[in-house]
Every structure is written in structure tokens, then in C-alpha cells.
Length: 288
Image (tube, rainbow, N blue to C red; front, side, top):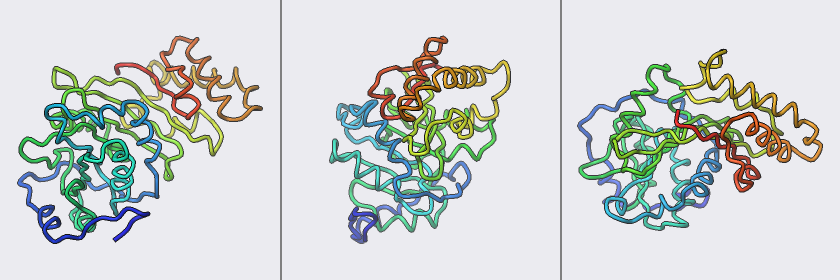
């Protein structure tokens, strides 16, 4: 069976192994489950640029640790696409697609192999025994929850991640051309340290600050009010975009880069390295 060039075994022994029961009831609720080809390509590319060493790390428990795609949807395309990208630098990387909907898991099992797993689960990840995660990606999942559920869900996920591992949690537009996400790292104290809020665009639709505002992660989307830090950030970013609007004559990318520089001058710690900005990534570094 094939999904966009990714061939996976149908071996009965592998599928049987994937159907092992889990005693815990999955915590969470089903997502809408709809996605498009390569919707999360830019999210994967960000990780490859930001910390590829996390994907290749093989010391201690990292040797057998997983990349977890939480809430992959009606079909496993995001999990399989990530497997194809990440295994270019680590052919032995274990990958786990997690879904809370039993039918979605069963539909994905024919694509499982000895390094690619699909299991029923929620925020209480279906990892077994000593299994741990090095990276969790949870896109378009927490956005449907109440704001009060955000911190407990993240804290639950932290239990399964090795120290130094990452969580990339956010929301994207339907085709993934624009997204915003929290980036958090598992700390020595066993919790998360939020490293940054990431904004990503491929410039295909131009560049407008307002577009990012509509897809903020759950912990920010309801806080666009005076006195809130996220409100101040967007007000400053909009001003920076207006001040540099003349540069849009040279293209959306130039405008994006210029606006970031102006935003930095206004006191916000954004990464001005061109390797990020030219690729459409604005990294606001802050421990939220």
C-alpha cells in the first residue's frame, strides 16, 4: 500500500504487534481529523533546522526513543511524511502516530512496520514500559480545547519525554502555509521550559501580521487584550510592519525580514538570523 511514494509492509506479524491492548483510557477528545498533503512539512523543516541533533541523538535512552505525532487524523499521512523526512538523517528513528479514535488507528495499521507504530491514545501517550519520546508534535489538537485544559495536557505529555526533548504544539492553516506554535523543552526538573513562540509562513499568500493572530495556540488565542503580553507583541509587530511597508515593493519576504528587525528594535527578543527569516520563520524567544 502506498501514500505519496511511502511504501510500508503489510506483514501480519507486524500488524498483530501494533494491536496490543492498552489498559489506560485515552485522555482527550477526537479532533476533526482532516488534513492535507504536506500540511506539516514546514513544521518538520523547522525541527530539522532548529535541532536536527535531537533526531539523530543515540546516547542512552535516546537510542530507542520516539518521535510522536499526536492526533494525526483520519489517515496517517502526517506521520508517514514525517517518517520520510526525519529518516533521511536518522534511518533508525522510531516513530509513533497516536490517535484517540479507534477506527483511525485501525485504518493506519497497514502502514506500520518495525520502526513505525500506530497506537490508540491521548495525552496519556500509549508508550510501553521504558519507552520514551524525544520529540512530540501536536498540531491542530489543543486548539479545540478550553484554555483551562492547556496546561494540564502539556504537563501530562511531559511525563513521557526525555530530558532535553522537545514539544512543538500549535495550529496551522488548512494547507500549512501559515502556522504558529509553542516550542518547549523538557527540563531537569521534569517540567517544560517554553523556549519560544514560532511563527511560520511560506509567503505564498503574501505577509500580514493579522493572519498569524487568527491561528495562535490555545494559551494565547483568548488573550488578545490590553495588558496581555501577546497583545503588546502583536501591536508592536503591526507597527513594525507599517513602518517597513515600503519594503514590500521588493516582495513579502523582504517585508517580513524588515518588520522583524523593526520589532527587535522595539524590545522584543526575536531571532534576526537570516537563515530563519528568509525561510519564513519568526522566532520570539521567551520563557512564557
